[in-house]
Image (cartoon, rainbow over all chains, first blue to last red; front, side, top):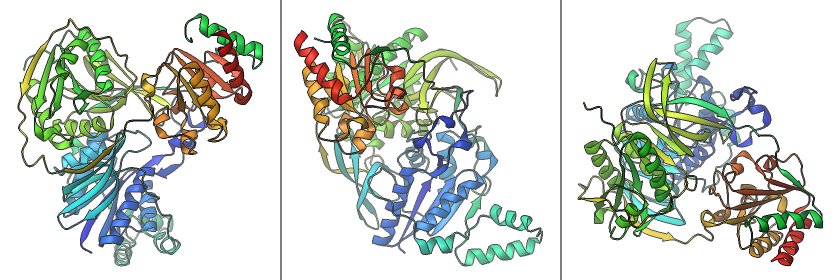
Length: 298
Length: 340
């Protein structure tokens, strides 16, 4: 294991397959109607990480920031080939815009310590901003390569990658450590059945405590012992709070977010107020006539 | 600290000295915002060889152009551009800084905003000046930039405000802001800047670059005939091409048709394609997802042809033909040929 690669991922509502029920009549989003999924381009970033691990040998750490349930995308990462996982979860992180998010992730990367590459998906489908990757690179003062399709070569000191640009591609080289945002240019492998059998038991501290309280255990020592056992066999999902990663409370969550949402409007279909044209020869003729008359055509 | 607010700045994107359309669209929009705020419109123009572009920027209405020329800015890489822009912003503190939401703008904007500790809103589709009453934090803001953008896959439109120190930074979707006509009699100031770019910023080396002209530039088209999943197959796209050719237009497509492999991505209209506003848009066999409508609903005239009377495309159509495109399109071609 010569390299350390961190992949930051996000759990997102599935906005690509939205149905009518996803929007409430008052125009707010009905999150309950939207399944939470692994952000698609983050799966491409993870796939690239796994490929690098296979090609060069690397420790693959996957991190995410989100509510306790976001542990699900970390388990999915383990099913595909991650070695270690970290869940940043804390009420203090809530309401973060991209600046506050990238700051929190930068604290997490610093906590991990030495790393060679950070991979992120280009953008998440809930906001489509594509900002967190470049902002995280800036917070860590490391170079960024956006829109990466694949890595051509990784050496001790440098990475050479092919990235997509408008109307074509570029091959660029940059020193390590570096951050790359990855586009949909590979086919993420499915979960491995053996790994699912093993890692479905992976737990965060919150999940372990909940299992205990559900079973009416209150023994703190037992809890610690079980945590140690899970750690030993690689079934521990590290759960870190804002103070665990040494984050400045003024720079995370809503407080650390310069952008505020003034209002939100749902996009409603306005009443069908169009002129109906008969699909007959006469109907189409009069339509074309109208368009020529008003100089839209001809 | 002075109360005087800063100017409106536009980052001018160029490739080989040719200014990107979106940058000129933003100059047009920037002038409108600057007029409301009573400040100047200024361009920041970076690159290796910028001769010739400055006059164009003055003609489109920039009062001042900061011309930042250096061999280290060619070819484009993020770090030297970010350093040069951050230095300029720190010196002049503009009120607003606009980037086009192109590949370049979307990788450069965040780097700049993060270093300046400023808010950034991506992919705006409208910008306005208004006051903001932040009820949560009990603070009032005067004359802020309302940053309007779709979110949640286009299902909502959010208005976002940057409440920290200026500049208020946004990226704006190409094709959504109206391009004003240039006025060749307009003159302006040009300030030449030698950027301080060090070896810290020149660490990313471009080894190879392959770029091709797009198959089609839909943003320049006045008539677009678009096909969707209802076209049924690659071979049947011939009908769409035939109608486009007859009417003197170009061919567009929905994401479903592109994903099916029937037509190249260059033709895709919508949130993950291009935003267009032609004189005439004919949507053939396109159901009209919110993402598609986001890219074409500002067209002057929209004709929707679909067999499903409940297709959402009809919600933004001016004319609706409920019928089979395989029968309707040949009738349109025949009718047009007989009339012209």
